[in-house]
Every structure is written in structure tokens, then in C-alpha cells.
Image 1 (tube, rainbow, N blue to C red):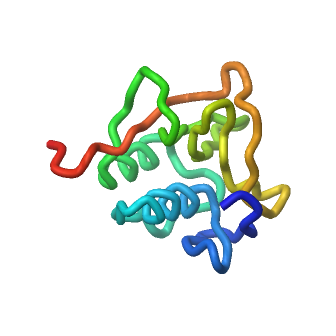
Image 2 (image 1 turned 60 degrees about the horizontal axis):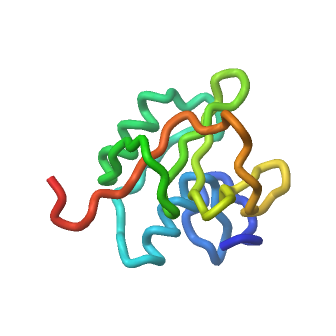
Length: 122
């Protein structure tokens, strides 16, 4: 999905994605349809609400690292961002560049890692 246009509240790679839409679209493309949050702002979404949305969709917080994990990144001024972990990169919908990009992982940029529970996980 790298190169897909950025669109606030975007959930469809054909029309554009935001960071939440990218994560949900990536998992849908892998065969996992998830309960998606709605009504979230581009900025100012509280960390607890993001974590609740991830948990509702079937993710759980992990300490180890695997490709495909979702990263919840803490940015300046209390802003948060989601993306997908690659072998040495972070794939995310970058509003400033107006598209989905793949960037190297920066030291200390990960707030938390989340992994999707396998089907039939309790």
C-alpha cells in the first residue's frame, strides 16, 4: 500500500488511507476483517481510546517484535500515530507527504507494539 494517497478517515486503498485505515486495510488484505473505530480525530485522540480501539479489534500489547505488528507511536504534543512494522521499517500514512510511506525505524520512537490475536484467540 506504499504510495496510496493520504485521506483523513480513509479506509479504502482505492480512495486513500489515514494511519488507522492503513492498519485496518492491511489486515483486511491479509484476510482479517476487523472492527474499525469511527469518529476519531486526525489529532488529539487520547492514547487510552486508541488502545481500546486496538483491543476491541482483537489486538493485544506485546514486548517482542514481529513483522506485521502494529506500532503505536507517541509524537510531539501528545499526538499518536499507527503503522505496521516491517523487517527494518515502519509503513504508515504520512499526512504531510499526503501518501503511505515506508520509513526506517527511529530509535526510541515506539510507544507500544500490538499484535493481532490469531483466530479463535481468547
